[in-house]
Image 1 (cartoon, rainbow, N blue to C red):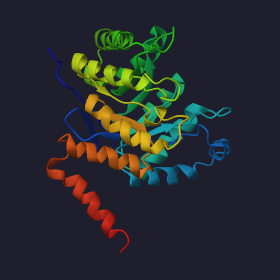
Image 2: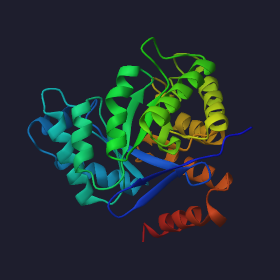
Image 3: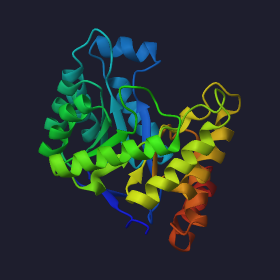
Image 4: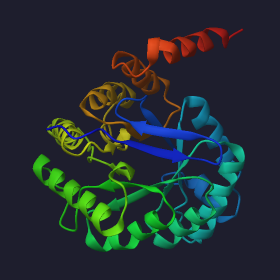
Length: 291
């Protein structure tokens, strides 16, 4: 029997976003992240957060529903930096936030200042990691992204990913009282350039997770095209396929119109854009822009 399909509710101080199987695909803007951005890292070390304002503007204008914030900069106080960044972003936009850190203290600092109901990025199926993060998720009434890999390795088999997903859901719901609706699984999208089977595997993983658990899913949209030419074309093909398989959100750079338009078209074709209202409104906005 197919599991009921769940909804994950995120909130800012004034806006609510629902991630679900029967709603529009949720775009999580990834740009507020210093990884691979040397100048941004130097600015953050100097206490200059001005670039965040530009990133917020570009991600929101590109269509982001939620903003992922990562402040992982070496030689800084990540907890303090993350708290300041979250406070700043909430002064600039009413979009809900995904708080992204591998440092427990930074996650708590971010959650403590956040106004609303956040998404936390992330945990794995490792017992120690769940013991560290899940109490914070419960304490601050947040939702959590969870990756079905453990201390051994990233599993390449669909069955192992499904087994670890079951473990995460059972631990979170039974030991910590977190609702299954608040667990967003990352089914582990991996680079197609490294192994031609990885996309078939992740799509089957998505279908299994959707049908067996009904939970929502997300992934790093750019992972699949990493190392390949014409990456935007690959992303624009992959995400609609993933949406059909059960993916309900993605962490992505919403400054890429080709990929965003592909997602919006898939929403229309999958019946998640009532009477094409959003598609038509976006088309009219583009027509009006030059004038």
